Length: 330
Image (cartoon, rainbow, N blue to C red; front, side, top):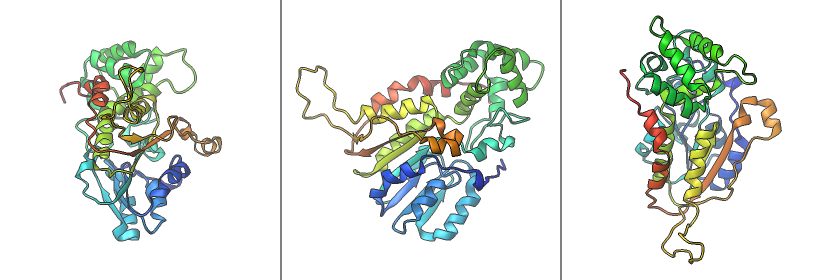
């Protein structure tokens, strides 16, 4: 893929809020798990006491990373890896690990990648280091599999009808981006508001890039390599991501008892210090400048203890991981 990143169009979401959370930790290494156009990394590097380890599965950002490596030399490193492989990073004095889970405007607007319903031609949607493309999913996934993807990853009311029509039409033609949009519009005739294809494209992007599995594994591995006192900061853009992150922090920041009449267990542990239970959202002024930020939610927590096994966390979302692991002939 040859995506072109236009830095003038890139707005790092909730940047000031992020800085206010991590600035007390300045003077160490920060891991930017979703480097993108480098908005967070550049801001953090303005303080000469900070180092950045940046990760991104999308190799189209390599040119931006190279410029930062040239400018900051020993204070900036870049790895073209998925953030679920964060445990491969061997660094000391990690102060915070940052995840921005949104697609940048630069990625969405590159119509060659097929990430948007405005694209033309072959469906792709790969962000890098993928096992398959969206085109393969649309042409080979079973009707039931497509239904599950659209229902659970897109919360699409018309998932059954759309899946059925895709399977019918693909017998006689290759379904490209504009064809998929036409299918959705033919079924959701009376829908208004945001684009009718939004949920379908969201669902397919999640499936193609295994975003749920990536997030779950990335959060757990981030906890494992983070020293006590360090922070995990996550910016989400849709309800599935936020549900996962909320559970991850909340479940392990509280000590629960089987009965409210019993004293709190002296052996139970809190693994996170969750200062804010509600997410931080963009201000109205930020939304005016950058409308896509309106759906962003920032959650963060500080690590208190080592040794959490996260079994309940993983089990709670296994039903979503199972959908991402649906088999089809690739």
